[in-house]
Image 1 (cartoon, rainbow, N blue to C red):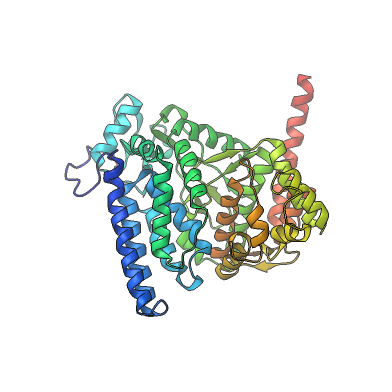
Image 2 (cartoon, rainbow, N blue to C red):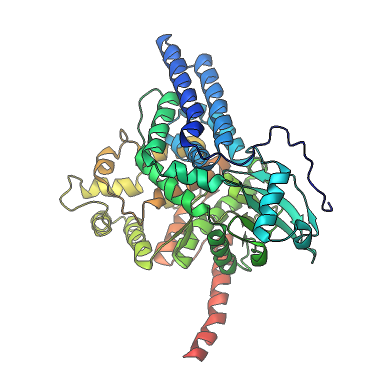
Length: 484
């Protein structure tokens, strides 16, 4: 629609984010205490299963989602990680959908800022009136998340674009949160202890550090624009993976303008035909792991809202604020471990893991335990025939890999994940969760053989991708030869 001054009656829309750490955290701590009391009361009544427990979890999930949404910044990001990563193996399978529903709504529908505030940020960043930069601008955001919200607009040359505007004051509020990593770790410990009164502890100090590093990067939209442009160039013309182009002249530290993508949402994808869900899951797999091995870049935020699904089986990938840049030798460490697993080489898997710094040769872990840690009950990486994933299977597999009381407990107890590879845990959990929710089927082991053994692809999508990159490589080679 044409530009118009946004209405002044913003209602209850949030204004600039406050930076007072105690004031921002206090309601969440209060909710935690309340949830602890309710959980204790239910436990004392001996009703931790059935209707009473379900009602408790529904009520608690809704309360946390609401308060995380209002807090924005680091604590909201904690809520997103809490929902999409940690609960996968902390919540009973029959209760996971309660938290998935509440927190996915948090990721997609966070409370927006007032329209006039959005205009103030946009024009202050661009240094000119919005009408000079855009032919049309919809001041009602169609997406709102932890750091910014997204508006549909149209450029004067006719291009449809999405404009992400960072909340004013959010950077200061986040940095105030992140100055005290102990606060975030303590809050996550309390929150999860309230919701899951069985006393599970899930490495929350590491989770807090991960949140701090990634969220700090996400504050810089110029960094995100550069990362997205790298991915867009890498996948330009790809047969089934698309990354929107950035409009650099309309992107700043707090505004990111990019090509607008329309398609199916995550909720729509979940109820699509099996064939489409299989293709989308394979595309996500190839986008995440293929980027690491070909581009030495990895999108570190594989959550549902970052993908747009298309009816031809293709996929558009969004949000490049959290990118891990790998050195070649670090990717090779993982490749060596996976090659040994593919060959059922127990001693080779152990040696490659030790060389990568994951265990010391003196650790009380047997080669068989190390091999089982990587390969046991993990059909989503090793299956040599078609395997259809389910949420229950994914939860069981993650429990095996990451539960301190699971089958890999001894290997996990002595495992030291090198800092360069620690992010892979989050990627693996996110990817497996997406595949499980899609209930997708494929010959998953063939992907590992492609990535690690340079084996020929066996799937239709894999063959199309191989032809695309081979054609690109052949086009680049003469140019390289000419410059020598």
